[in-house]
Image (cartoon, rainbow, N blue to C red; front, side, top):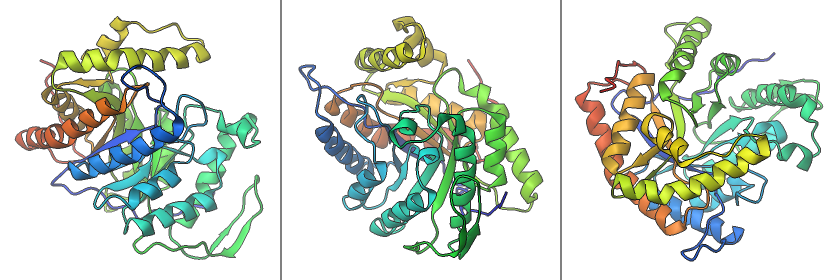
Length: 371
């Protein structure tokens, strides 16, 4: 396996990045009628513009190929957002590399990087849905090999020097350059759902780690964060620059805990139970929702409640970044806009206040009281 180093710096020791992610969930309007995919995509652009205005650090757009999500080409949406925003980092959440071409992924995101004046990043993963494989004529029997080989090629592209590479699933490249070049390099993360092998692989390629925590308490992922730090130290040496760790988790912000739960619950149930029926799970209940809000991976509530829970997760895992997936199910656009506004204006400043008060330093986990 050819190994290459991605030039992604560690986060500043003075701050933790706080972002937002969306999959472009198909929404409903105020009357409950389904909103057309085209309007949902336009709404995602407006949501990103608001996030930029209220001080959110990063905005990620996911990729799906099914009717309950409007975005199948997140890079195209991000290119549109790039021309409407000024400062926010723009990335994927995630790019399903297994069913894409690594060269084209690099070219599309280096183009977004140009349009945004250096604000692009790509988060690479296998995704939790498999619709893209039959859609693009790929064999699911090669699920693991496709990702492994394509990640190896993508990592070889990051230094932006002539690439010589070979694998089993595509023709080799010989002294090949890829354009357009970026001005300062392209940031690339690896998204992981929780397998030790995937965590070590991220360290081996010297790529930052994005942990997708979508159920259960965040603390159960502490061994993975520790493993990543240990693997980096062993593979790259203790003097190598520290690489950041981030978490992506679902949530929703409203003025009060009660209002947030009331607005989020019905749409979360639609999303969760649709996916559950496809995968043979039993239907979730209101009790399941409230349990996840209380002690699991749902960051739902007032700005104070959400900020307290995010700060606790950051401290427990030693994070450099936290991304809130602010839409789960067909939540109306106007409610999402309110959630984004509260997240930027109230949650983010409060998280930073809590972390400063705890003397938190990114990369250094802390014991957090469960009182």
